[in-house]
Length: 228
Image (cartoon, rainbow, N blue to C red; front, side, top):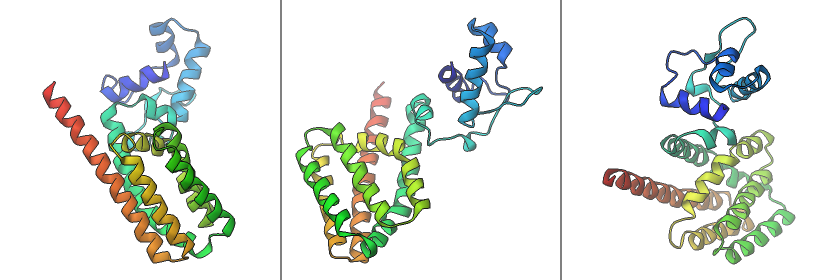
């Protein structure tokens, strides 16, 4: 029911800022007040609605919704998710090159050994996109942890669900995983050299390649929509 109500809000069906109350939900769906209350709690936890005792339930501004929640990502329409993935990429371009540069200064031999192992696993998993994306994510988190900034680490970790959605798209392209492995190897070699400028540049190149793949996917989606 929370998913259904979210989709109704996004579609504009609930457009006056007033969300259904517990009583409205029980009447429309034939469920108990307990179920209706839990539904509203879910929506409130995602910052979609405000629920206050003795006051009507109101829809919060969309800019304030919790777009890092995996639940919300599942419920949003594809075009909105596409916009969020572009915004995620903007965040990554701002943060990850500098994280790579920071990591190049402080990375340990143990972390380098793990990164080398992950590159080997990537090469072996280029025929298995789902398994590949897990190793890909861990590679980037290793770099984030090596930068030794707990706030940036939590920001990157919190965006993991969107990151997974983004990787699923970029991994679809022909030879994408082979190119991604080469990009990760270049980042790793810059870290081994303890060269911040080289690490920053290698990460920027990797993210630029990802951006091109996302743009290609978006263009294919637009062409398909025009044909329909």
